[in-house]
Image: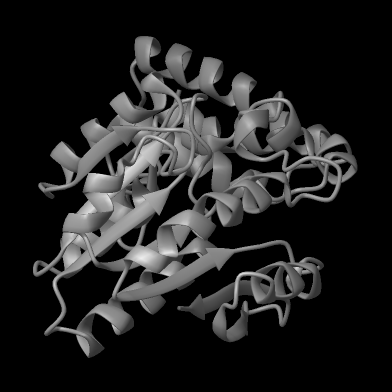
Length: 287
């Protein structure tokens, strides 16, 4: 079958699924099967696809019609212009999370004289901490997660992107010893923890609810279960540090509740940042 006919078939086949961008999905999947970029599809529309490759393409398109995310189907997602290997064990990196990288890099560059340790709590695929490490060399980078399989994916991504990041199996900060904090006195703490209220997760799109790991999304009744735990962990840690800065990704409805929780531990310079849609997405604070 020719490329143009294969695409027309895929467009028609995907249409009933009411996907956000069926044409783009069809093109991305065919480019993946042919190991070409999307531009190739339009400059070689009359080229014939080998039967074996078209058969593979049909299977991938069928998976997409069932709402499986493109990133899981092709096994890769670009984040901060870097490639990341992803499976259903990890959350697919979101564009809005790049805000955390931008804020982290700005802070690191403005505090060059400090021997800063960057900790990405709930690192998942490692996209955030690896992007930071790729773009800034003069700091120590650590990613923590509570799942060994997830950490294996993060380590693979660090290798793919040739970055030096240490990965630690820990439930938030609980496995970090007192001795660790004595040796790491200047900390930048990045977090993109599960923050969807359970009812929001239950009503999420099939692409999300059916395929992405619930443990990476569901933050309990109010969405703040994990951030509450993290703040509790920090109460004992903060007095030992010389400087501390945090940037956390949150649900737009949570900033007021989080501000109240942070004030209880005497957090300073609490501020928020909106995403491109004008919704509160990041909360930052220091101690």
